[in-house]
Length: 451
Ligand code: GLN
Image (cartoon, rainbow, N blue to C red):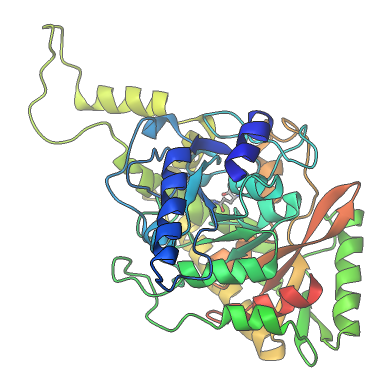
């Protein structure tokens, strides 16, 4: 049914870069066989899923939305993908994204934009607009996204889906093509909070192949989503996120959710996180610095003799690299490589990268202080509802500003959820909860209570 739905609507939505009908049907048939043989199966066995094209999949193209990786078929699965397969979730295909996960609209994909199913003249958020649109358009019941500065949560907010960025280290990054390694984290994209919890449980857990993976038990997320009880829960409304720059309709829906929480027995407190005001500036230095380093490997070069087949002059290594990187990377990727290279260069390192890292520490301290007062923090996920395609494409700063509420969690490594809380101007609005590291279960409890 999902393959039929994809065939019917994906021409317009363009959520997928690759659909693997054959593989998905074979995996589904395998689940049937195992069930018939009396095997005890995972409760998500047979439920199909879409995977963001930044996670490697054996035998299936993985492009990261870039020309640089066009035609690449990885010889191995990301740990997240192996876990989906082991639990029996058939993979429907790979979803569209901003190139190397850089963007907030999916317009930076080298393969054309994804459209928001609520209004196809509008963006589905980014960078994981493909995963969010696939779930919102019923082209998949579940999807996997990745979130470096909001790429799961913001697309969730603007497409009316649920998106979770787990605690940094909670989900393995093995096989996740790195954008900014200290910020990247894969997580669930779904239609309900309980679905997200069930998927979270499959994806999470220690992996010796990722040196930053935490060797601690997965938080009890499913139990928390089922509990959905906020009586006595202390919810901190972040003063710095939700005022100026946030659309009135977004603020209104947010305030209604907070009232709803209060009615359900939560204790609402206003909390100040003063360093969050510098979150965007710190992120847009730390992230491009890591990007410039991580993307250096795409050099079109490897070991050994180089000979030109027809006797023409053999280009130098630098010429091959420059020409290939010029052709392989899009403008936004180039912009960030240049920014990052600059921020890391000698003479500027302390002023830019060094200062940004200090701000990062201050943001982590703001979180620590806040979580001494409250159990979870709340804010709107995104300042705006889905904007029109093209509207912010020529204005990178306006695009970056959309990440203001999602970035602090990545800089501090704490988990966050976005869930739909109604419409403004006929378009979905998202509510974000944030929790202390490895207290992901609190997000599911609070989220399920509001939902
Ligand atoms: N919008 C942010 C950026 O462009 C977030 C990206 C992400 O989370 N992958 O960097």
